Length: 429
Image 1 (tube, rainbow, N blue to C red):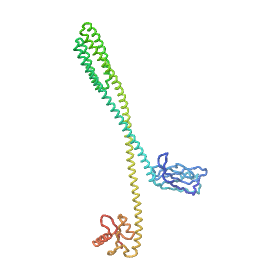
Image 2 (cartoon, rainbow, N blue to C red):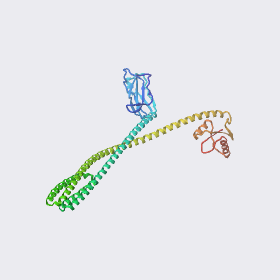
Image 3 (cartoon, rainbow, N blue to C red):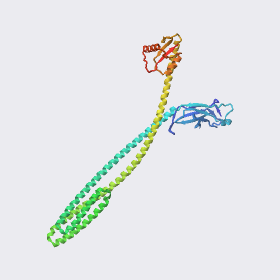
Image 4 (cartoon, one colour):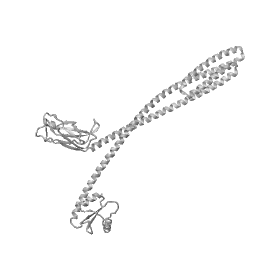
């Protein structure tokens, strides 16, 4: 094995690149170049991270070992070296195997990774919003079904009221039959009691929908009993007709009334069957709505948990974003200070050349034994002090009332103001 120039060289292979397999940004370092006698590496180089961890190469190609770093990347110096043990039996004696290193700037790749993760979170938040909208639509659908059920319930109540009215009519007819025939009085009383029982059952149906089925069956039995009683009345009417011709007309009238009651009973049976069918249909719809409601509750809890998780991740990203912004602002401030320092250096060199020409160079004003100069450029106290030193001067320090008056008049004559702002006054002796 030989390195091409007897040395190990480390470099960064381009900038951050997107990796579809890991869904992250990747930074690649390489170490080489090596030449092996059998065209295959007979050793592995050793990588050292800025934190001191030891890593193995992730790939080898054309005489170079490669190390792929996944975001987030730790910034700093990465070192590549050949382990001492393999050197004893794989390297030529006249080869140099110096450690080499490369400095990695992690800001770019980490910022790119953060931007990608923020984009992914926004997409997931959009999907969550769509899910919430679908839940709202399902809720509106369920409300419409509830309104439909309420309408059906009102219809049932109307049917019960109609049955109640029919029962009251039957009671009136029974009272009339009682007045017309004393012998039928006992039967009329029995029919009246049955009618009252039917009225009570109708009230119970209105209060308890779940027991309507049992009550309807009971009403059906009562209707059948009424039919038997009507047949008995027919037989007794025939007997009365043979005994008394006078009661013949009354018996015929009674038959007509009984037929009317039978017709009403049949009608009520049909209405009861209809009520039963509607009640069964409503129960099926209620069970379906309950199942849908439970499903919506489970989905709502799941969405709430996902929303809470997303909020926590967004807060974490916001904190990291603020930290990155602070670092960027700090770098900008340092760049601005460097630019300002270069500008001040140029001006200082120019002024220094003028100061050496005379006791008080041009643009300087003599007062007492010192030269004064007013600088209108706004800067910090530290920068002003550095600038004075470069001109072999110092910031002015007021020692007397006369010097204070001179400085005051000089500043105002230059168009400046004395306030809390730091202005530069230089003296030269």
